[in-house]
Length: 142
Image (cartoon, rainbow, N blue to C red; front, side):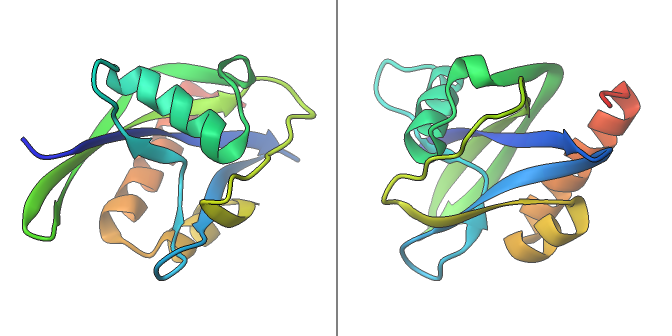
């Protein structure tokens, strides 16, 4: 098994619309992604997701409400080696939460599904975002 990473697809309900948080990297092709990062030795994937989310976006565990029953594992090939990224789905737990970016990212946006899919670009991320949207709607979380 190759390197592992973990993160959250974070959403909020704004004006009765589901919006997703995407961060734009300040390196490479400046792609847009949910907060995520590499699992450190001795750390669980979920612990990594919380740590990386706080490091990259400033959002703490108390700012997020993790939805039960949603977990997706994406498998990639990176430079010929397998990599897995585990995502959970989390809603902002209260209003007035501020995103504070680290130097790993240069911008962030709260965007509805169609724009999130266009910004992310990758088929597996588009599939993940659509699964999130369907899960939220099925759970009637707004």
